[in-house]
Image 1 (cartoon, rainbow, N blue to C red):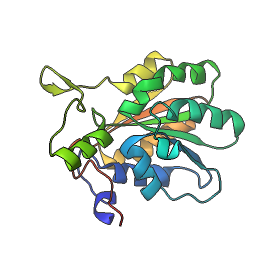
Image 2 (cartoon, rainbow, N blue to C red):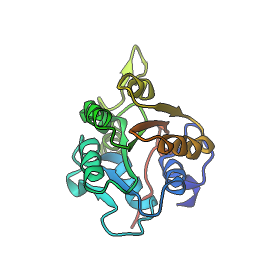
Image 3 (tube, rainbow, N blue to C red):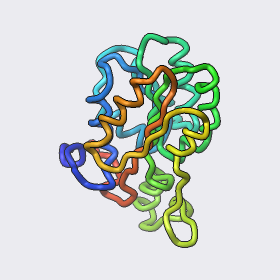
Image 4 (spheres, rainbow, N blue to C red):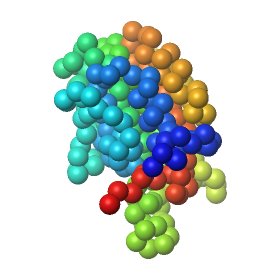
Amino acid sequence: CAERGNSDAVPMTQARATRELRAALDRGAIVVTGAGIVQAVIRQEFPVYEPRTHLTSGGFSSMGFTVPAAIGAKLAQPERQVVAVAGDGDFLQTMQEIAVAAMEDLPVLFVVYNNSGFGSIKGGQLASFGRTAAVDFMRRGEPYSPHFANIAREFGIPGERVERPDDLGPAVHRALAGDGPALVEVLVARDFPAAGTNKVG
């Protein structure tokens, strides 16, 4: 629905983040997703204009697919923008592979939608059981997350954390202006329904 895609809420909805991302990319950019709410939101909200520019693990929803698949896509299509869009749970599975992009100066843009948890599993638990178990990343009673933008900088690549919807497009443009990999971390909603995807019948 347009409500989530147009929302100015902070933390932002994934639909709004995806709308801002699409506007900042080339028409023929390759977007890669692997699992979770991110995969569903990209499928629903990210217009694709050319064949083979939306790569995903499909129904397998394999966590950890996004980062290495995006590196492979960039090696196969070096002239195109390649963007890996992962939730924080997905990204944590294989984020060490951004070292490969750094060592080879592969200009892949890694975008991490950070909701401090396994959001897709959380949504399924709420729908099925009305409660959740072991899906929120917590520490001492508070939501927990690494600072992924800082981690990127420790890998030797530019990293930026974004909280407001209007700041995402400029951050993406800055990331793409470089000649190597970069990472943009986007803080997104944790609580449903804002954290979820649009239902389709």
